[in-house]
Length: 50
Image (cartoon, rainbow, N blue to C red; front, side, top):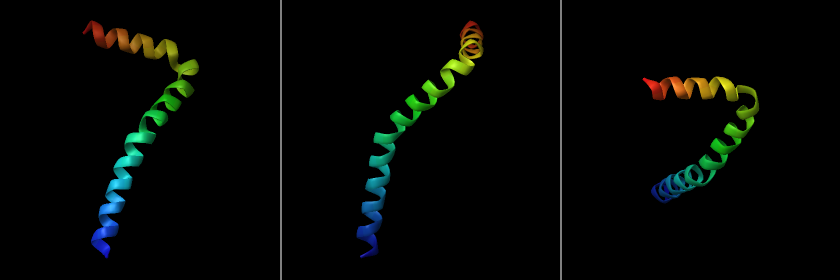
């Protein structure tokens, strides 16, 4: 019985990660965008320049 639950938990964990992670990243970017946009652009350009 525990093996079945473990398989189900692993499957749900994978499903939750795949479905919720993009939304979480988009939310994080949209939240930080207005505050740290100039610094991020400077950091990105510096990183790409190197």
